[in-house]
Length: 131
Figure 1: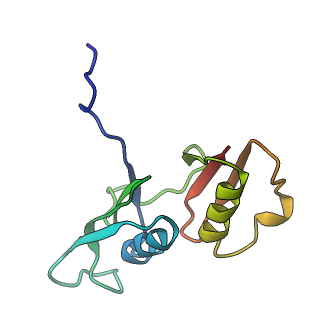
Figure 2 (figure 1 turned 90 degrees about the vertical axis):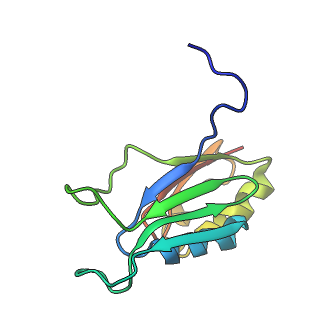
């Protein structure tokens, strides 16, 4: 079965460990866009703040959805998945790297001339940025 144009739209869905609102707000500083959050109406045990059931950042170049709620097996951080962004040029990529990096722990081993640059942000999300 083939799909016609406009039938699908891709987005990213991330699960956070109680800091979804903070993370999506941070990504808004990187990408711009509009934030929207649905939260529980009451506090839940194990959460510092009212957890986000569903949050979204909708920007021109990226859509990120997220939640503080995890499946029964819990949140597992792995290195098998990353968010890939194709940047228009090296300068655009460098600007995005500066926005995504809260800490410079990855920058010492990075070569800005590489075709692909990988970094992990403060929310333990892995990004691969290409030119």
